[in-house]
Length: 235
Ligand SMILES: [Zn+2]
Image (cartoon, rainbow, N blue to C red; front, side, top):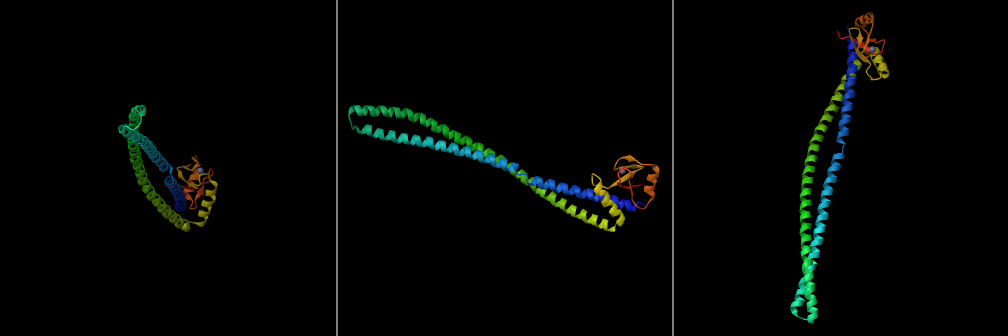
């Protein structure tokens, strides 16, 4: 007894399983396509590298200015020691060299400060790179398991679909037609429900006892008078 209604119930459960596996596969595909983290990592790395490049450029500028000044001091020193020119010229040259030496002191400080900035940005960039590498490695590991999970979901879906086709082929054609017809009408797309006692578990309606007895007695699956789902009484 109830073999036909059991087949209808099983068909409904296979449909639910197929929908679940499709949803799972779609969600895994969406997660695999999530490139936000990769973009954030790229941006952080690029900014850190740009900061290093700027610091290096500033350091080179400071060193170049210092080198130019040192060349001038060397030149002026040579001219002063050569003793060529009037005493007045030599005195003004000596004064200029003194001013240049003061300026050299401040340029040396600036060059040192620029070197420190470069070293600091290089340390920052190394820290960012390490953090980014770790985050990307973690994500790749996650993606590997997502791909495996999706492959598994596809395989299970195919197996479930084959099971459904085999069951539908073996079912009473009238039951299958009723199943498909009611499936198109019910909101959740599940045209079957269990009967517990006299209660339809699909719409949670307590049905007349006499009707519940008929569901258990009849060979053909009976539709719930309230929600029209095909009923199966497990006991
Ligand atoms: Zn019902």
